[in-house]
Image (cartoon, rainbow, N blue to C red):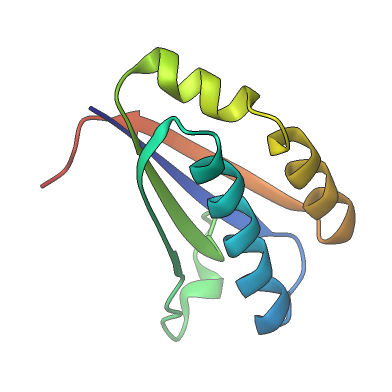
Length: 105
């Protein structure tokens, strides 16, 4: 199994309702691909003073579990995936960092 963990950092603050919708849209398109076995998404929990640290501070984290590299590639190539990504990039620009890894637990 491969875990695909994404750190999403929006360029500007995003309303809570919009962030919730973004997370729901990404999870839905990935799960609807039929290649994702597990999914979870969480908001970042801010800590006072972190804005002074010269690092990418994510707005949210998403994790998708897939069987293998082929399933991961297929999930991102699934119908609707590109459209959802472009929709949200146009609405609320963001940066993404990710890592593909074996399960942490």
